[in-house]
Length: 433
Image (cartoon, rainbow, N blue to C red; front, side, top):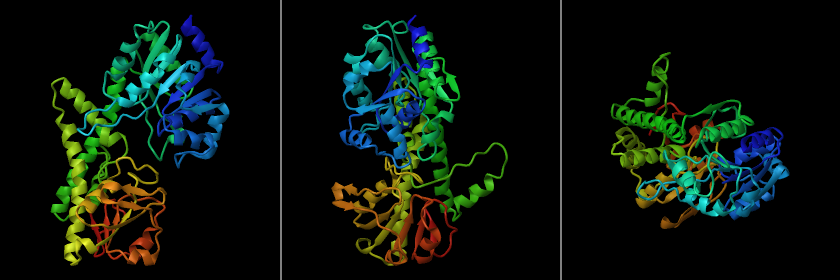
């Protein structure tokens, strides 16, 4: 009866949905729920973010303010977790970062459980969307709630992997196939019917762990291939060959090859972090996942490779490190977004500052805040590009190739360009890194 009543309320839009964590995953999801006419409670521990959202402003550049206003019309946003009891479905979208030793840090998941456990009630559906190692949903939620509830009878638990591609699909996530899973058949049935209200296609995994593993597999596939192509870049460079030209030729093969492109390291939440979750879990099972480890190490080597190119160019042009004027173009981790998480540009900047190359400035049309690196007393805001400004730098370093950059102007007025993205052809002015 509980299941039937919940399903009936799904279709009558009588359920209330709680979304915990209003970041790059949770906010688009909450907006999608509101667009479909459901009342949404948004929860977050970031008081500044809550204040911004309640002032009808979006904290994410590519999500328009109008969508935030829609969310507020259909619900409310707060840090008062007592209101979890008002929600029929609770979706958890909190961060899962790494510890300093690269082990998984699921403290946000654990803290969320502590915040909500006393406000959970019968006949609720609890779904984890945060990426983590296989077993997390079962261990951190099901096992901790099975004494209080009859899971699958009067309380329901599931896992569904997020597939947000920052800068591309935040406003169209309903078109991306949605993987779902449940603690039991009854849980799976409810979770799948819930997501069917919002997504065009729902894929049922046979267990919580299969769904959790599949999310990691998707991102490790990318990490390993990016690591491979970055290694090929290092090999090609030693042979004085342009890896971007090599890829251009190779991708003409209509089968058995999919092009990946090298870049200045890796950034964002998924690629630098998720592989370590599975590597850690595999190690616990006595398996050394060597591909995962090697790709992660290779992707970190790229920053050292770029720094070496800078040092070689300074030496060739007889410019002392402490006098070198460097301009970094693009601080976000990938093009056309405002996301600085695990940014290769920030990582490189720290390494240059450590080596006494401290006359560094940057420009990024998508990132408007100051960049603070306390350890090196670095605190600057981005600059606007003009011909005069470009001419004042010894090296212009293209790290993130935003579409908003005026590439012809940059080329014309720069003394030397180190191109990490393949935007320019190599010549007397442009070198690859």
